[in-house]
Image 1 (cartoon, helix red, strand yellow):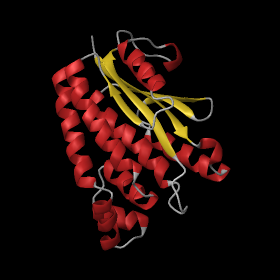
Image 2 (cartoon, helix red, strand yellow):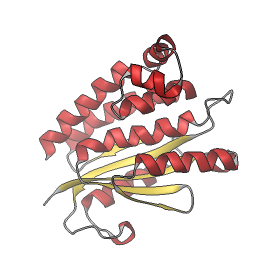
Image 3 (tube, rainbow, N blue to C red):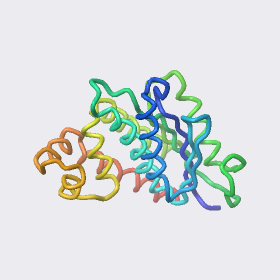
Length: 207
């Protein structure tokens, strides 16, 4: 049986966003998720099927930094994404997400439901309790990093997550290299990179 990842998420404070901001965010998320099977439902909720579970955390962080970045001109960050990653077996070929079944879907949905009423915005769940202990530390650390991330930092981190260099980001966003570097440092990119590598090591032991 193949081990896959399923992401279940929703946009935090979507009703408080300006219509133009919400539309922009949905456009960014759609582009970021384009290479996967995904669908939006109820307007602000979505589910993503990721064949290679190693890519799941990076994808979740793309969603979260995209949401945080759309508030870059506001005094506070209104937007974020609450997201759960379920990693497990998917026995059947996935044709439509609404009818898909498997361990990854159950784990993702259950973890997402358990986030209700809690301050956490990222959870990673597998059927392996030992792996979960390590993944929980990674998720908690990332939650702490993204909780204080500014919209301008998130805008830069979003691009770095897609493999761009700082120089490419500076050119794309029309910012000086020193400004981008400041956002990279303040956004704790080096720590995010380490956590992504640790996540990959854990997932490779499961697959």
